[in-house]
Image (cartoon, rainbow, N blue to C red; front, side, top):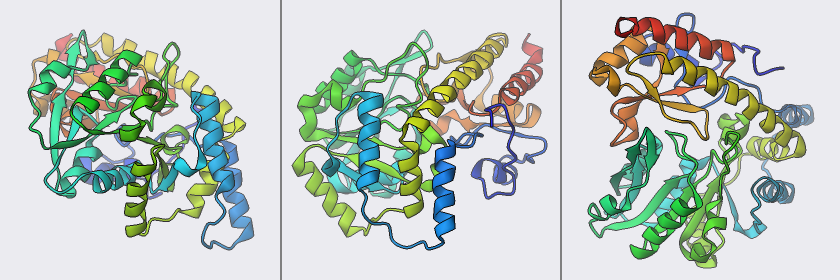
Amino acid sequence: MTFDTPICRAGTHCSKWDMLEPLYGLTPDEGLAMWVADMEFKPPQAVQTALEKMLDHGVYGYFGDDRRYLDAVRWWMSNRHGWDVAPEWIFTTHGLVNGTALCVHSFTQPGDAVVLMTPVYHAFARVIKAAGREVLECPLAMVDGTARMDFSAWEKLLTGREKMLILCSPHNPGGRVWTMDELRAVAEFCVKHDLILVSDEIHHDLVFPGQTHIVMAKAVPEIADRLVMMTATTKTFNIAGAHIGNVIIADPALRKTFANTVNAMGISPNSFGMHMATAAYSPEGAAWVDALMRYLDGNRKAFDEGIAKIPGLRATPLEATYLAWVDFSGTGMAPEEFIDRVQKVAKIATNHGASFGLGGESYLRFNLACPRAQVVEAVARLERAFSDLQ
């Protein structure tokens, strides 16, 4: 297949398309689903082949002997990110929302606070609050339309109850690839305030040309005693339904604490996810990701060029991820009005910016991981929906 090939996902228990009408009032025939962060593309053939081998065997028992899987994770991190990982550092979780929840339970207590740089991935706040912890929102500063860290402002917000900071790297939404200086500043902030640092790097393979993602563990190896890394194949290869991720912890004391939580909750791997991830982390998977990013770069450019022609709309420069972050504040409209135009006139389902926390109120998030024709159609619909501003 090519990335231009449309794939009908309606009626397949697909969140993005089968929940379009219940949540947005749009049928799959009339609406464009650009909200849930998965892709409209099939994964590498190696993943499909791995599943076919499982089906041919026909017995689906407990997964054992994870050496090939661990070797694949280590190969990928070394070859794609220059990061050497020991097999004993790797915990396999049911995705990284589950990984985040396990970190919250392992390293904080009820009533403690967790720092989030908002606007940020909404599931973080959900699991923190559900665990009886507090969320401390530290808003990112917008400088010329780009998110920047503002530690001097954040210092004034701390209450003393904070025990953990969750970093989204690259950032979702907003698509920032943090610089070495920014990563070191985050580490210094965590050391100063005695915070466990959880670095969610699920988008670390989805980086555009001209940008370089830096693994937090490489940027600040000196803080290994408070650092927890999270990575996954799911976003990279569009296998989110496999619900598989890795929490990688170099420090023995942190590892022991986390292992106790994993054991207490009876966490064990999904065999389908293990086979899929092992197949994905391969030379074939690497070639597929390279081709994917070239295609997504074209989608990004087509979307940005179209948005730039619509008065009042501004797309944040996208350095990583396939999630465009568009500011509607220039329209002078309240969120209810521009959301209505996007959903009811343009008939596009997006993620509403307010769901990502403070600072997101004037934004919508658009998923660009789809055939380019859909991106072009989305821009045309937005142009018509806001034509009275032109």
